[in-house]
Length: 627
Image (tube, rainbow, N blue to C red; front, side, top):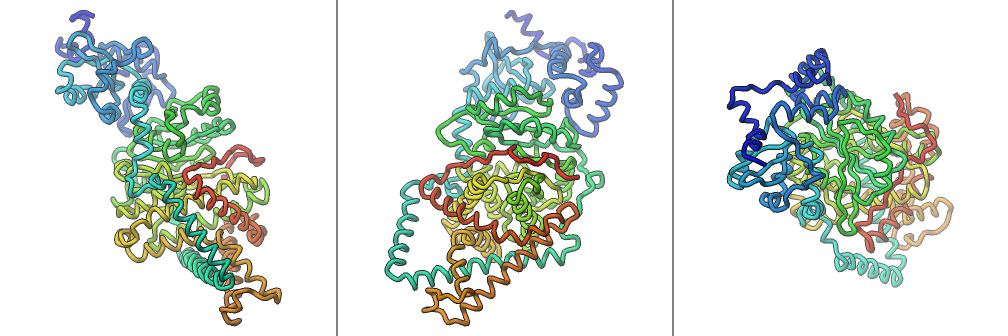
């Protein structure tokens, strides 16, 4: 390529020659791509949104990416890079760390003489890039490429470093990845010691574990009772939805939403249909469907699906045996374009104004509020009895217990979806622990330890209730295992945890995580006390007086009444009242959790990082959320 042709690649050549750049919109109108009326409407939107004109036109469906790129090439008088014909020079790419290329969304393409051609999707920002690269590449010119092509090229060049970093973003002291075989063996030894103690002194052993079970269940019930009282006394129980028009930042932020997918063959079309209902400006929505590189099932499904321009696919390169949702989220985080990062699951149906609500709340909230957690509900409660009970449980948790925990100022264990973060603070915390199978609950604890706050926001996402017994047990066992791992990780240095959380939240942490696990693991021990109501003897009678045993049995009855009351209040809303007759049957629902707990305990010893995938799209209920 001659020096004369190189000059044609430089946008400054036109300006130096006294030829001002014709606006992008005028190029598109002249080409017949858009009408004058569409241009006027897009320019008005640009003043409000602050998004590039081309992205607005693409999001509205008035132009496609190729049309905009052709117009940009003519506007700046530059050529387009063809990565399929010639990949970026590896020696040039290696001159700067991957963080630089990702931050600026550029990549060096080739060298011609002393001049390095830098591919960019934003010619208007190239002078900043030119200045930043001056010490490495003194002579640069820009060429045009679509951002997806640039990020794909960056991924190809740095795939292994990026995926290794995704598996270890969280510092070792806050991660469970150091949980190796010798560490796990300590718990096996402890179990064997207690087994020997039980064989030698069965009555005393049962008494000790019974007292511990009673204390843990009573403490967890106290937390539920405080939450229930707080719910009944609050007016309204949850803050009313925010009117985004009343609290709107001067400039609306771009919001990136990550949707992890794995072996999804039924859900893709429904997911896109639901996301299309979102009312936030599409030019400021960046939805990323995150899938594993070797996930041919999901890839084939997406290949048969037409994606809107504001939805894109990110593939996580294969590396080792670790394939978890948090690792995929960590990898995709580097490719997000937004200042707010959100998480949805594949089966989610968020409220259409959910992002509007999130943006408005972040604009209003204090600076230390870095996470907003939405409410989760189910859209298929009529599928069967299991789905009804799951819906009642979720209503109790998300409508009463979790808001109560928030009002008490305790650590909020996050859910895995309908989460929204300020990007800067999320990256500061290291994202998610790639090895923790309840990465959401763990992140909630780390947020609190860092001095940040999570708020609940009154916006609802509907999910598919797991309505098959064995998949339900597998899903619940993953949750329980993750809670155990999270508890053990953060209790490595209990005094430090106490210092960071304070006494009140430290107590809440103990009660929540131990109480959640113990109510399932020790349930058979507690069930044995019902022998007294049948007039039978109990082994602990040799160590506890009868009045104490009868008092314990009475407490169990009161706890069941408390659970029923919470369930009835939780489903008292007009669209859920039909579930009220099913609330008493929850006493037959929770024993399934016992099977899940022992499965979790087994996996904790042998396969602590194994992710038991929950399959979706099997409900017989129509996947349409209630109005």
